[in-house]
Length: 268
Image (cartoon, rainbow, N blue to C red; front, side, top):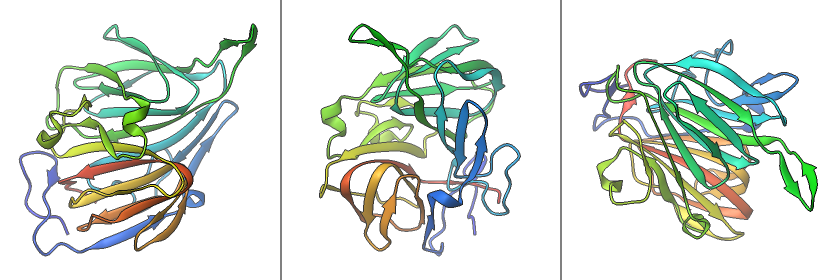
């Protein structure tokens, strides 16, 4: 059940909203595989459609992508979407029709606001010199989409490097439109109800999920134990509704991505 709308394509939770903890296992995700791409989709994407899997809260896309060296997504269009990219391994080159370009690597958060319309490409840029020898590796990244507060905004781009020491053992905002995080070092997204937080945890370290009507926890690497749910491995996700504050404890080293959302899209 979704409650009253708030002036955009979403709804706020009502006082009697159901409390749920929906665990989605890595192996159950739809996948798109080609010669250069291995992409796994937490939500409906492209030709993959399952009833009731359109979104959680404000999050529409959570794609777990691996792209081989020298390959990638050719120029293609987007509009009216806030797209956040987080690289786990390797490096990714971004170029878009507004003239922005950049190399995204682990610890650097990127936001592209598609706005009234933008075209962009993303390619594996992992060729480097290591000891004088050319070396290439796949690029592994998570790409996440949320809707903006308004349609037809001016397209934009922002990237920001998050220090390793900030991510170590702490859940910190890396992309946010929530006013409470305005003083934190995070890229800004055009949705005042949503924030992406990340943490890198050593074995035994734990963090507490934020209190919010909608939480999406994604295990990007390693394995964790979620209070009330048990063990989760890389690629597993948990969609929490009406409940937060659980502890997430690393089993070995781990990296997690958490969307904190205070509204939901008003469609099913």
